[in-house]
Length: 255
Image (cartoon, rainbow, N blue to C red; front, side, top):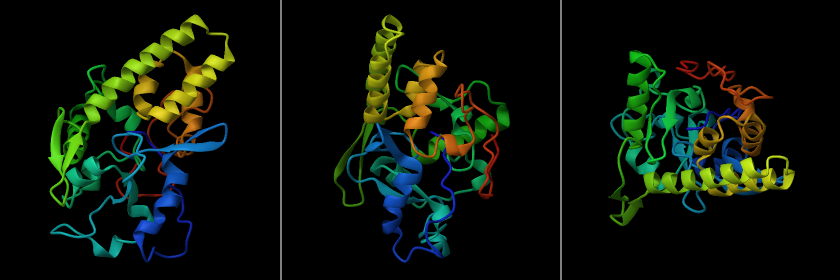
């Protein structure tokens, strides 16, 4: 779950139709670029590259028993989500102090990624922090193994976030080997950054290339909202704590 900064709303007041915020959100927090060209967009939660059906996601639900309809068009209540994360989260109750969210917390410190495709609470967390991380994973179904689910119309959706993360991990490891064998070759570095952008799962790439700051900083620079978050050193891409939460979002800066 990649930390980002959404920034001030590009319009005055709330959006009359929240769906029209999608383009602005992609540009601010979900765009993957190579040589200045946008080539991918990502789910704010699972980090998958999403070619279609990427939806404007209401952090606090707009309807249901826990809904806050007054926030339906509010820029500060928007992220972007794939159909799996969006449908799993649904209209569930959201307690901001009990979740780590990428627009207000340094989620890079809260979670760790494994070769088996699992996303888990980081081992460095204390007990309170671990509970918050696990609450977040449960809310989005990111603590589940591979399974299938159905959308609101009853159509079967392949819930393949784990399998896709495993595939990208393998791709990143192959890329690391290529880089180690051609470490002075800037063209190889450029191809690896392009592959990261086009494949998604930013945090997997950051994990596999953890010992190579020269590539990590290029990964951070290649995705929108990353450097702007204040969660990465601008030279080494080391994780900084906490998220500075410069937009003053409720419950922010916990990690």
